[in-house]
Length: 154
Length: 115
Ligand SMILES: Nc1ncnc2c1ncn2[C@@H]1O[C@H](COP(=O)(O)OP(=O)(O)O)[C@@H](O)[C@H]1O
Ligand SMILES: [Mg+2]
Image: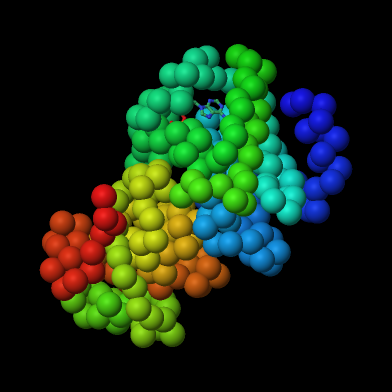
């Protein structure tokens, strides 16, 4: 994260922090639901809120199915939202490959639950304006995403 | 199309959302892969699915949908019904299989997304 970004975080009008429980597929997504609610209360547009919520939801699901959980931090500004998802999971060996639609290492039991189609990371990219993946094998993964209110992405 | 008409066309049980039956919905999608729903759906209000777990409800909520139709007679458990109630989603259950359920709604004028 560049220094100016760090400094800017102090200017966030709202900072939300969540623990994402890695043992519980059922509760995955609770943080995203909460963020959705908070953004709605702040009066952001439904289309913007949806993009934030979907990107974060896919990230949350990934932390649960691939990394035994982690933390989610959300910084809300007047014109954008920054989401930082950090885990101490196995890391991603080949990020470029992982970003491809359809690539997935998810086991069959996850596929039977409706996830593991290899669309999560591409979806996160699709709905955000910036996305950065910092990952190290055996150490963990941190994904930082920015969604701008005035973006014409849908 | 009203949610009540969907229930009628599919001879579906209304599991929750009785207060939403008069609500108008304009498009639907059918899928068992939630990431596909999250990727391609745009303003669809109804999700038809053969999948049954809490993430189906969360996916529908993320997409601002109004109604989930469970096909093949699947009935949700208490946890799913409770979650749907909290996010204001109507739940229906039909004996029809996915293809037929989608076909019936499509024929009656409920369309998917324009590609
Ligand atoms: N937080 C993570 N930690 C470790 N590996 C991950 C993480 N997120 C994604 N991956 C890897 O990237 C692949 C692609 O992710 P994604 O596009 O979300 O598809 P899916 O979750 O359906 O497998 C995953 O199968 C997994 O191998
Ligand atoms: Mg995923």
